[in-house]
Length: 119
Image 1 (cartoon, rainbow, N blue to C red):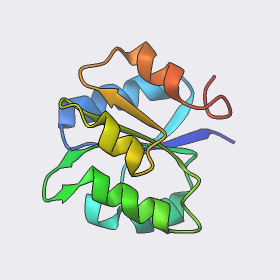
Image 2: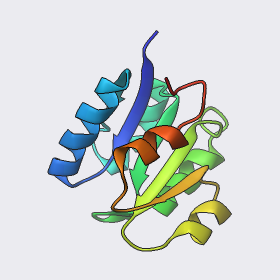
Image 3: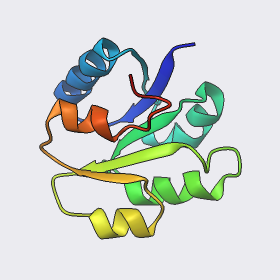
Image 4: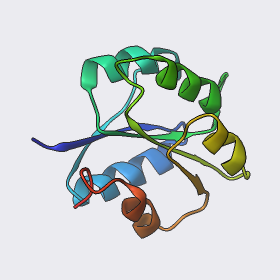
């Protein structure tokens, strides 16, 4: 079974780069229909991890993280939050497994993913 990661990012160029990087590393990259459908998409797709920007258009990644952690079926998904601003404390306080400051090196992302989903 392929390793699955959902990428929640609105910058099209970054989405493309992440898709290529993660596919190269052996991941099936999933994209939500929209941030508003994230919880439903996670329930349908069952990824092992989520990579999500804190600053999404019209919704906060921190608020989406709250929804993920409040859902008994999703609360154990490994969540990496990222931003160009330092939200590390807020991310950790609200239940993110990892915060990754942008810009980051691709290897830094891959190394942060849990062993059971990383190569």
